[in-house]
Length: 314
Image 1 (cartoon, rainbow, N blue to C red):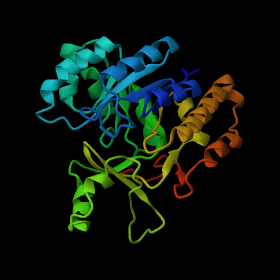
Image 2 (cartoon, rainbow, N blue to C red; image 1 turned 90 degrees about the vertical axis):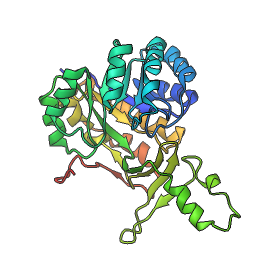
Image 3 (cartoon, helix red, strand yellow; image 1 turned 180 degrees about the vertical axis):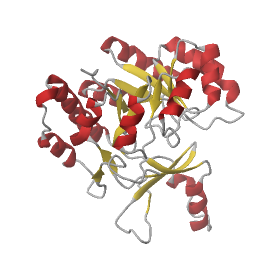
C-alpha cells in the first residue's frame, strides 16, 4: 500500500494557517516576496518562527518559498536568510534558481530542497538531475497530463508534488504593467494609479475579445504583474488515480481565495484522502463532498481538471 500523500496548502496569515491546519492540512508553503513568488501572504522571519512553533507540535511541516527570480542584489542576502530558516526549524525550501541550492548546501546543509520552476519541470530525467544535486522533491509543471505525471513518478526516486486545486499562473512580468496602464488611463493626475493596484483583492481581471465569458484575474505585487487562469483546477473526484500512483504531495493553491473558501476546500480533500486510505479496494467517490466546494465556488470560475486529461500539454 502506498503512503498517504501530504496535503500542502498556502495561508495568508497565522489566523488562516491555524484554521486550515485544523481543517486537515499537513504542510504549508509560506514566505516573503523578496525570495518567494506569488505568495498568499507575507511571512517574514518572525512570522515564520511563529508558524514553525505552532506547526511542530501538531506534526505539520513548514516549507518556505524561495522560487523568485534571483537577481544580483538578492544573491548576497541568501546565506543569512537560509541560515535563519534553518535556525527557525523550517522543514524545506522551495527553489528554482541554483543560487538558492548553493546557498543552502553551504550555509544550511540540513535544510531539505524542493525543486520548482513551474514551467520546465516536465520530465523524469530533469527530476533525477536535480535529485543528484541535492533536491528531495520535484514539483511538477501544471501543464502535464496524467500519463506524464504517472510516468515521472515511476521513473524517479524523488518525492513528486502536483497541484490539485486552485488557480495557476499563465503570465508574469517583472514590470509594473498595471501601474503603467493606470498611469496611461489617469494621465490627468486626478487619481493616483498606485491606489488601484496595491493588493490582490482589487478585483482586476483580463478579458479576451474572442472569449468574453472568461475572466483572467490580474494583480501586481513587489515581483511585478501576474495574470492567472480563468478556471480552478479541481482533481477531487479523480484524486484516487494520483493516490494509486503514489504521488507524494497534493497542493491546494489558496491564492486569491477567502479563508472561508480555503477551509471548505481543505476539508473536502482531507475527507477524500482519508476515505481512500481507509479502504482503497472498495473506495468510491462521494459526490456530496464535491458539492460542498461547488456551493462556494465563484460562478464565473469553472472547476476543471486543468491539463490532467488533455492531449496537448504545452
